[in-house]
Image (cartoon, rainbow, N blue to C red; front, side, top):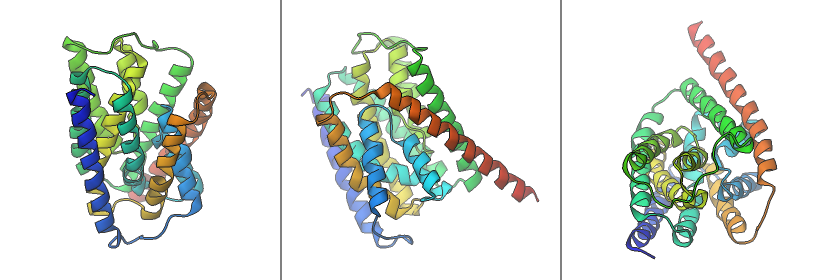
Length: 291
């Protein structure tokens, strides 16, 4: 490992310890403290299995939570960030070590995402229910559009570069800052980050350590605010955490090939339905407030 990889692995490990310590110390004070159900653990396994394949976990988790009515809409962003953090940590520790990418790019984009998440989480924890519904609905529409574009090969599949320089580097870092902030509203970082780097000519494989390290650290940072304000559902988040790490390990070390394109089409349909239902709920909420 180079110095940046070693530093990131060390930083992710320290962030993991701090995150788990904070969660455990605050768990007993959570108003909804309870053990997760087997369904909630299974959701973590399935969604983080998809996550390690590059499909993402936020959109799929949101769809399942809303379909099964497991988590109130205003608590979904916090539940996603807290619950998926352990799996994101596992992904980062795996991919930062095994996939080569320019150390400067890796460090800069990860730092930008973390800063964006810190600022974004400070806003999201104070947002009312209808605004969170609008935000998640719009985010899911964007995610679905990205899935369709990738499946139809609208965007380039990427180049061979393992580094970016000049304006491309600046643009990539700026976009990752925005993506870090948006992730606190429930927008997964994987699809947009991979697309950004592909459009800038990066090797698609090189995006994995960048998006994994960004996701792990920003979720640990954002989770501090969600944990402190209790703006998350404890049982579902614990289920995601318990099931997520085995799902990541299964995808990373056991599964060698899957019809990812077909899975992405299926996820797109589910995400589109969920986005529309969120936007309808937000619209009804705004009408009821007006009356």
